[in-house]
Length: 124
Length: 124
DNA sequence: CCGTATCCGATGAGATACTG
DNA sequence: CAGTATCTCATCGGATACGG
Image (cartoon, rainbow over all chains, first blue to last red):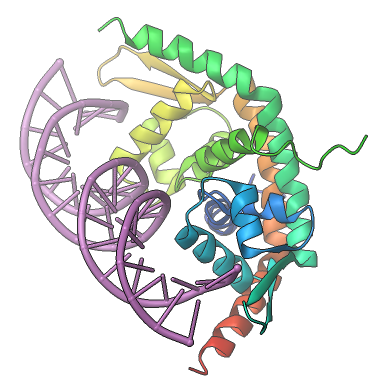
């Protein structure tokens, strides 16, 4: 009855898929920012900082598609669009925050490993 | 004394960096597979399945560089190279596994959100 | 204000062939 | 067996310009 470690290549693929989903350049930054509450497009753009309009749109669309955010349009002039995390989006933030905490706690270890590796490689 | 949710744009970048690091196509699959114990190059190649020799080499090098795996060469003929998780690598597996569990638990919700979004968009 | 369309360079990743 | 070297193609992501 060994649990077969991880159910090889069955679930690992799904895991990898989620990590790639969440590991793209802007997704986590946007979701984390929306964790502070609903925001308008340009508000979000400014809060995230450094993201292009194109990428913000793309990121938000795919977050909406996957059910992580809702998009609400107010047909005023000028138009106004609010984005807000869904329950699913807020739940996603939990394990992502855990990974974030790990990252913050271990950045030093990673950087020193890198420095050592790179200096060893520099012997060539 | 609000914790300011996440310390905007200071740490978020580091978080995003780790997620991209871990979110590439093969890293997690390789690390998870190595979670079962030390493995030789081709053993790993077979266990992961579908990875090219080039990408396995690339992935392992960068994991080694960041201190997640060790590489041990036995200068025999034919040569033998073992890869093994470091403590850091095993610790990384903890939050990654948490995210994995979340992913497995919520794939259904994501997929149905997608289906609904896509069918709505198909009205065009 | 919000979003789309287009162009373009940088990176990602597979296939293949070759070396110690 | 383990790894490197190319070549090639797809995708990512930024800049810019335009539309409702």
